[in-house]
Image (tube, rainbow, N blue to C red; front, side):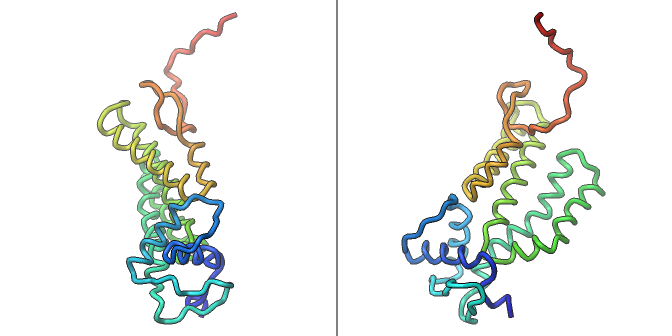
Length: 204
């Protein structure tokens, strides 16, 4: 049964988890946050780093706590569904449209499978969507107000989390940063222009 075997890139990430738990040195090109979260949940679940991840298809014995190893990505994948709904609503999408957006994640077979294995993609996606929600929500409040600051902080945490999980998380920066009415703010880069603002004359 594939669920009781090393699958896909668990071949790599399982070794990273083992390395953190046992203290064995390893090199990885990506930042450590996602793998540290995997390691933390596995360690709390009693995993001791003894499982072999030498190749795809290696059997995982019943005594290994698979819930501890695969639980963190599964939880993050589940949280992405309501977060997608909230993000769609923050972007001004109607409730039926937001439900359709959330269902797109819920019924995505690729994501359902990917978020059930020892991988960091669910962490990366959750942080990126969290950043979009924070930016979109902050844009609805006056700059530097308490609500704006809270949502901007959440957006910043999303950017930081994405960058600290994989270098591909730098894409989160493409949706953040830009001048707002109150000075430099964390806001969506692709926002609808304010057509009511009087344009500044171009010097000749």
